[in-house]
Image (cartoon, rainbow, N blue to C red; front, top):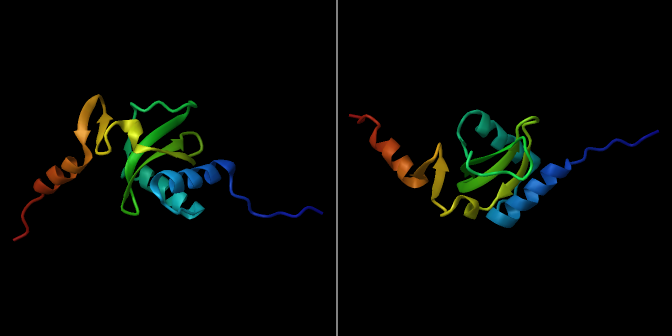
Length: 119
């Protein structure tokens, strides 16, 4: 008779340890699932300019627990595989999207300016 116990997948272990190392984020497997949901909802920006070592992976930039993070997701399975340092995208607040330079913080400010006034 075999003993079955729940194991954390190796890529999840790797991702959790990289999040702690690079962003001081103490994540659990549920947090990785929550980040994946945010990616699916379009709340993380895909980063096509960042080349992942293995194919079939895409890097995404976004916020989680009030921290700006750069996360790599395996396209075929939807699993979070690692977290990359923000230095991979140049300066911490700058990133490339569709070949244009953006400042993430100014983009949020500009979006707020476009909101109609609440009288």
